Structure formats: structure tokens, C-alpha cells
Image (tube, rainbow, N blue to C red; front, side, top):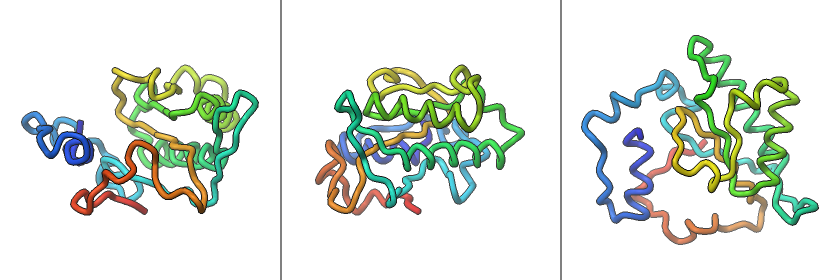
Length: 163
């Protein structure tokens, strides 16, 4: 894990005690880490999106799905020399969102994308590693003030990279 990524859980959950192995910034370096749109990690505020409940009472955010498709497409275009097959995970906390993400990716990239990108819930993805993770949080909207388990835990010292 890149040190820029491990800094967040170390500060929020481990009181700064989580340590990186030697030279992890070099070992985990990827060409998109220097790109303004990507870096080692980015948070994107999808302000136009709004979560909706589907038939199974799970949540879906279709605008966020389209943003995920656009991010993946941009990554592939800007770094076409890199083979992203089997190196990308698209995850969400909501099973219905995974279904919607899968449909959006198939619509844009064709059916074979399902075999080249791993779509899964956070629980289903646990224990795996990928070079790129697109996390769809789903929850959005003008009245939302916190993201569940992170409520009240983020500190000013983290300096998250947002655009």
C-alpha cells in the first residue's frame, strides 16, 4: 500500500501507529500517481448524484456509476501503455450499486469487462488487492453530513486530496 493511502487509516483508526514497510512509496509507484486527476488516491464529490432505494431495499446512485465509468475510461486512455486487465476493483457497500455499476460498465465497454474488472461489495472484496480501486460510497445529497463509520473521526491533519 502506498504511504499516502495508509496515512488515513493510520491516523483515523490506529492513532498514527500503523507503519509502512521500507520503500513502499517506490515499490507501489504507478504512472498515474503523478497525474492531477488520480494520484495514489483521490476523493471525488459527486454532488449531482442522489441515492435511491431499489426493489431489494438496497441503495443505488446512478450518477456515481457514470462517474466511475468515466474515471475508468480516462485512466485507460491516459495510461494506455499499462494493462489494466485484472488489476482494477470496483467496490461499494451496497449490492444494488454493484449491479448498477456492472450494468454501466458493460454498457460502455462490452460484456467482457466483467471478466477483466472485479465488481464486488466491500465484504466480498475483503482480503484482495488491486492496483486501482474505484470505491462507490453511494450516499450523497444536500442533507448528508457524514459518511457512516467515519463520522467525527476525520481530523484536519489528514489533509485529504479532494477535487
